[in-house]
Length: 95
Image (tube, rainbow, N blue to C red; front, side):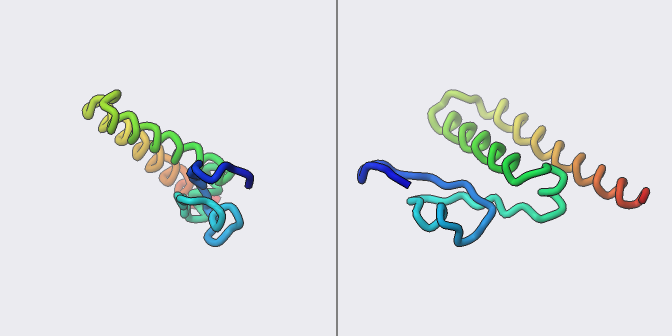
């Protein structure tokens, strides 16, 4: 990873101790369980979600997103996760 000395880096990973996490200044671990990762198909989806949540957090800190809107988005994200888990359990029960 090449960068200038004054630049800070942020890695998003599901793997503890990977090369990118050792070299980055800051790390966000997704730490998704295997069942949920399979539902998302790849760890990539959870990494995109982390970037989205990070952008929401930054937008809220800068006053660009209202609290009511932020709460609605967080609720919707949790609702999607619950629906995925429900679907996964139902599919396993049917097989």
